[in-house]
Length: 252
Image 1 (cartoon, one colour):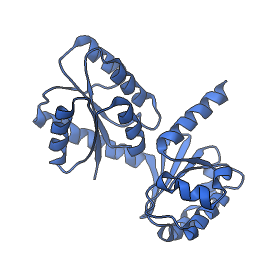
Image 2: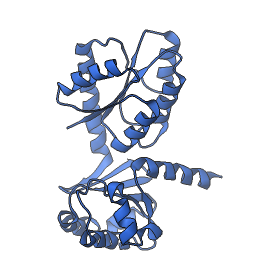
Image 3: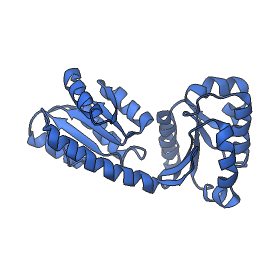
């Protein structure tokens, strides 16, 4: 099921769009604060964003620009909804690289047609980013310098696939990249599974990789020394912020 994030400070209008999209069986996430909406988008990584922008709304315009510049979110399609055909507002939106928009109240027939077409593009883009997919592991390159390895099931299901994937050639290809293990989707994490994660990390030798731990952060810190041997993050947003800081340090 494809996910659409709705960012709109006008709660009744956001609810209306939310209900409309859900009627087409899309999974929706609705939020009414701009800053939280951006943070949530980086964590959820939806297939599409609907964002409401008012005239002279500098905060939302800055958020739109940030989404377009961020390597993690730059390829996610965005549909702004605006109050009127304000020439200056439309020009500022286009400068961010976003060209589709709808005036409120949106024409829902044209709105859903545009969403469907953009989601087809998004699905193809995601296929291009994913370099390997098994039932329980997804490996993708959101950028040329980042590799995300996501575990989608308990480690007992992941382990057989790991043996086929993490061969010397694959590990060599990751040497110049920032690598992160995303374990947020693991339903539970017990000691046996934590030991499997430690063995995976050992495959990378001296390379320090990252872990996006989510709800498993506390257990990892309490039960292992991974906090010292890896870069440990609660959310994808924290990981992205770390990469940005690292890039800034390397250029200075």
